Length: 274
Ligand code: ATR
Image (cartoon, rainbow, N blue to C red; front, side):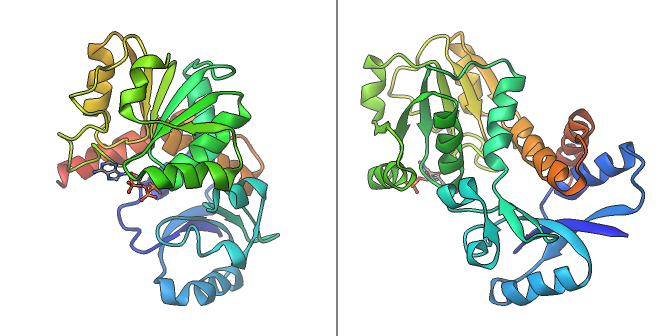
C-alpha cells in the first residue's frame, strides 16, 4: 500500500481524504490511500520520521505545522518566500507550497486575466502571502488592505515585491479589476460577516474571488453580484492545491473534476452533521 495523508492538529475536519481517495478510485489506483494524520506540535519531528519509516510517500501539511515544519524539510523557493509548506515528498524530502498554484490555476480555469491588472488583496496572513506571491508572478499590480496595517507592510517587505498598502478609503480612487479575499471573515459559522465594510461603496462590475469555501456563497460574493460583478468561491483553490500535491506524489495528472465533486459532497455531508 502506498500511503499519503495530511498532518495537522487537529485534522478531523479536513476534506482532503475524500478528495484524494476519490481521485485514486477514479484512476484505478487501489494500492494508494490518503489518511488523516493528527500529530501534536510537540512531536512533529518524531511524527515525520515515523511516517517516513512507515513508508509514507508524502504528506500535506496544515495548521499548526505549516511554518514550523520548514527547517525539517528542503523547502523550495516559493515555500521559503511564503514562509509556509503545505506539501512534502518524503522520497527526496523536498517541500513546496501548492496554495500558490491552487489559487492561480483556479483563477485561470475561470478565465480571469491577471497580467497588468489591478488586484486588491484583503488580508495579510499566510493565505494572503501565497496569493500575493502568485499574483505578482503573473504580472498583476497589487494593493493590500488588512485590519492590522503593519502586517500588510511586513508582507510586502518579506516577499520583496512591489505592492502597496491601502485602506478601504483609497479604493474609490483606484480602478480594481479583481478582489481576492484572503481573510477568514465570512467563514462558517460567522456567515453573516463580510470583509468589505457596508460603509464603503463597493466597486461596480468587479470579479471577486473569495478563498472562503464554506459557505460556497459568502456575503462578499453576494455583494459582488449585487454590484454587477462576478463571484467565484474558494472551493476550486482548495481542490487545485490538492491536485498539485497529487501530481507531485503521483507523477500523473490529477482528475480535478472528480476531486471537485468529492470535495463538494464532503462539504454537503459536513453541513448535514451541523
Ligand atoms: P491564514 O493562514 O488563513 O491566512 P492568518 O494568518 O491567521 O490565517 O490570517 C488571517 C487573516 O484574516 C489576517 O489578515 C487577519 O487580519 P489581522 O492580520 O488584522 O489579524 C484577517 N482577519 C481575521 N479576522 C478578521 C476580522 N474579524 N476582521 C478583519 N480581518 C480579519
